[in-house]
Image (cartoon, rainbow, N blue to C red; front, side):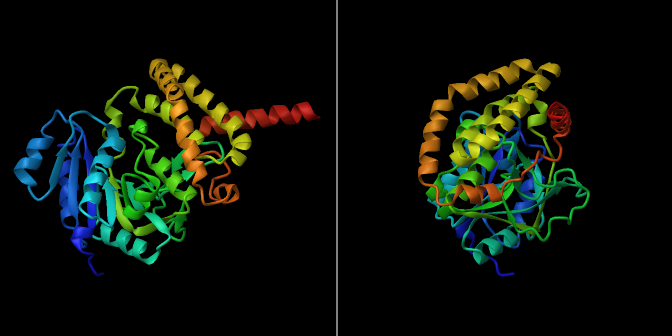
Length: 343
């Protein structure tokens, strides 16, 4: 494998209180077969992250933010710096992940080979490599995204499926030309589904997303967000409607919206049952508050769309996410009732 000039590639690592996981992450990036500049964007950490970087990783550029801007804001700061430095490709990598030595080389080579692809994503496994975490992001006709393959034991199952809907922001490579065209991450998302959003916008603009199974990385799932009570519920309820209203072509809305509404209401009811009604309510309220802004963004996105609604429909999953067990049960009951009423 031929390494690519390091001044043309940059890896951005967003960090918030990740001192415990940063050494393994950075050591794996510094030993890649394709060298790259590494930028750690620190989201105002309160742990020893900055001291660790200053004492042991002087070869890594550190960008400190005065407030926690989330994953989206953190990577945007890194992307701006990378593109200012002339990066042709910008990789994003979670601070709680570890990359195989050839991870970056594999992603760069596949984007060099496929000029119509704007994003490349790899095989992201759990920290011990026994299960898949993601082999790309999928989006369903229920308006629900999910990481393809998450939790599956057959880690080689998706090796022949090269084209995917989206790339996981935790370990993927982005073409700078594409980012300049469609814009960077939507910082209102803060965390969760911002990677699906930018992938959706890429697809609408005519860029493809490719999966390269030889690009392996290992991820400690939920290491940061799992420590904050109600965080996942709040972000989910806030971001899911934006993802749909910004990106789904008008032709597909009538089919998707009733299903999405049912799923969204089910999520809200489940949050109340789990005593997380307040973060769910806050997420819903903030989602509605910024909806005019998202609809204005939708206008620009759809105006510049280069693919048909039929193409978007063809790359969606026409089913519920695999792990949506309660929604599947609800759908099954509904089908039984409607069939009974029609007799």
